[in-house]
Length: 123
Image (cartoon, rainbow, N blue to C red; front, top):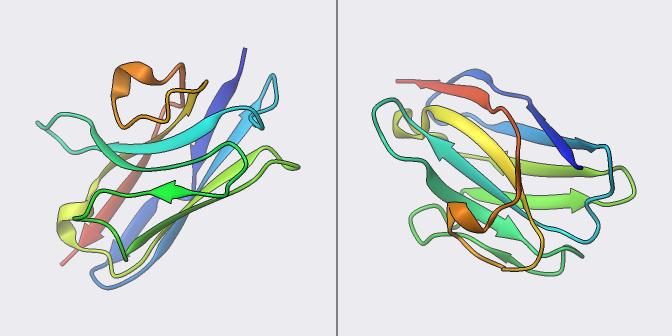
């Protein structure tokens, strides 16, 4: 069973950047599409982006496209979320998740989840 741990969160000023890392253990993620989600206080968890199992393709919601970039290193069992031009509304707990093959933006299509890392963007 794959375990996922997110890291790299923290406090950053608006306009700044952060890179989150998702570290997988207990198995290889090379056969999984990987996604990132976030959840702000009082809000539902929302889709941030996803990457195919080989890393050849990504997808982002239009509201985030151009600021967020997902990449992966299957040899190291790592997935990254690079976030630029951060805004206070990006404040949330960020989660990575593994998807066996749906290539989906839906939470229920993901099989494994990390515990999340807090990102706080100050104005």
